[in-house]
Structures are given as structure tokens and as C-alpha cells.
Image 1 (cartoon, rainbow, N blue to C red):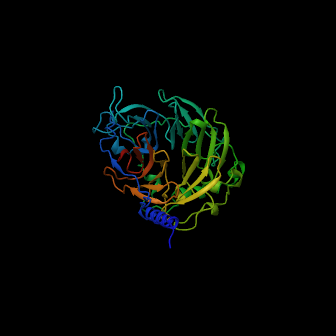
Image 2 (cartoon, rainbow, N blue to C red; image 1 turned 180 degrees about the horizontal axis):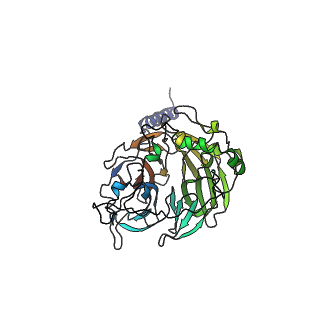
Image 3 (tube, rainbow, N blue to C red; image 1 turned 90 degrees about the vertical axis):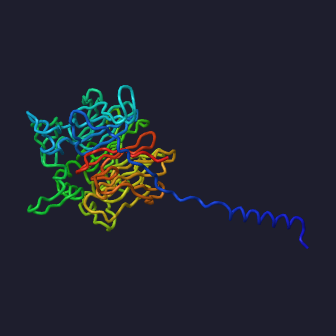
Length: 422
């Protein structure tokens, strides 16, 4: 005969089992949703036409700095510079354009609120004080109000072709005279001999400079090549720089003195462990991952102290801590050929930064990934030039509201804003 205690225990067990069965399943992570804002930015003033965007940053006031390449413009786009003009548009823009991300004193959302001229380059950051850091043949710090260059990161004194390292000068342009266009260096002209293209080919060619590498090996505590990415860690008083030598090195320096502190390569390799063998930097689409970075290294670091380094030509992201200790490899669209899929790295602005946003100039998407697992959750955008499409999506940035800004090279040559759907 059942006792009172056994009956109660059985009832509790049934109730617990029912509770487990009735508990709702944990919801799967879904990609964030954005809506393109076709009203932003406003038309540029002074008959400017933007070139390819090689740097993008949102400052402490939620306004947007755009680093563009005026030399991407062709002569047919510069006919308003002629004297007399032969068309209503356009003229070369400055390389640095400051655009409002909201209404403010004396300006409206999307207005140009400032600009300055600087040599063209690649990669840009803005610290919490508002100073601007531009990647050229090294990184230089600029006063955003005057455009005055304040200091520069040390670079080795020469280039691989034996020329002395020099400060870049502002371009001297003939009115109405443009360049060959934004894709001239990326394609083979019909009838011309086929040539190796892409960042992987650039890395392979650089690794053939054996005498230069012997003189300036991967342990060199200065910039050896050019710059792909810049991020400032104001709380730690550090600046992270992607030197494109050897397929890419993460270099960490003091933010106020530019003194070298540490650096690493693929899989967290110490600088002394980075291989200079071309075969170790080679990657074939859908093939095994390369032993070293392949080319065009970008990165960003999360609130919990992880660094996400995107090896674009290698179709992957390497996760380390801020000391370079390797944690995880995330593979991205491994079928992608010249150009690569893993471009700029941003995070969602929730407390845990649940999502990674990866810009992909080859497939023309923004990829959304679960940050913990690296699982791809979805994409935004496709090849095209309508609002919300991309033609060479290259740079990205987010503001304090979680809105996403993108910048395009190739024939895109524009910035767009995508509003986070609440």
C-alpha cells in the first residue's frame, strides 16, 4: 500500500517532469534587421563627388568621418573643375569628410559639418578626444579641426624597391584631370598579358624580396609595409595597427608615444615565429587554411577583451586575446577567390555584443555571425547600386544607437546608413 510520503514524492516528480516538458525551448540566435536610410547623407556641397571609401569611423558625438580616395575620380567626373566649366559636376573632394549622424547646432542629420585634406591612404580611427589617425605608408595623427599632422608611427627607413621612406605629399592635380578609375589596378586590360591580382598575389610578391626581409624581419618593431587597419583602445592607452608586411601583422603601440609594445601573426604566432616562406601564406579557395595570414588584415576588439583579426584573402577570422593568445578560427565563405570574403569587423551594440558584422567587398554582403560560435546567421545586401545594395562594400562602423554605416570602393564610391530595426 502506498504511503503518504511516496504519493507526495510521485506527485512532485510528475510535476517536475511536466515543468521540464512545458518549459519553452531556448530561442535560436537570429540575425539583426536593418533598414536602409535613403535620405542619408545629404548631397555633398561644393560640387564634390566622393571617391572610394578607405576609412570610416563614428566619433564620440555620433558623427561620421569618411576617408575617401579623390584620385579614384576620372576626368569625365571632373568637368566642373575646368575653366570655364563644361558641366555642372563635379570637382575633387577633400580626402577627409565629416558628416552629421544626427541633428545638431546649426546643422541637420546628413549634412557635411567639416573636412580637411590629407594624403590618401587606407584605414582610419578616431579616439575619444576626437583626434584622427590615418593609415598611409604609416599611421599619422591629425588635428581634426586644422588638418595638421601631429605625429607619426615609426617606419623602417626604406622601401622594398630600395627607395628611401618619405612623407606623402598632398596631390597636385590639374583641374579636370582624373585618374584611370577605381578598378584600374584590380583588372587586366583586354589584350594585355594576364597578371597575378589580389592581396594574396601582393603578399607573394613581397615575400620574394629576400634581401629586404633579411634586413627587416617580422620581429622589426616598426611598420615595414603599408597600413590596412587602425583601432584605438583609449582605456588601455593603446593603438592597434595592421601592418600589411608578411601578409599582415597585428602591431600594438602606445597611443600617446607610438612606442611599440607587442605584436603577433596568424594563430597568435609571435613575431619571431612568423614564417616568410611564400607557401605558408598561400591559400586556394575551398582548400586548407594557410599557415600564416594571406593578405589584407583588418581587426577589431570586443568589450570582453578579444581581438577579431580578419584575414580577407584567407577567408577567415582569427580570435585572440589582447596579448595574442589564440582562441578560435572562424571560416568565412571559403569558396571566395580574388579579393576574399572576410573584410571589416564590427560588433552589435548590445551589452554582450552577440553579433559580428563582417563586410565583404567581393560577395558584396554584410555577414552576420554569432560571435561566440562563429556561426553565420544571415547576410544583408547584394551586388548593385540601388539603396541597400553594394558595389565594393569595404568599410563599416556603428553608432551608439546600433545603426550601421558602410563605405564602398570600386564603382560604389559612397557611404550608406542602415537603421537598426527595433
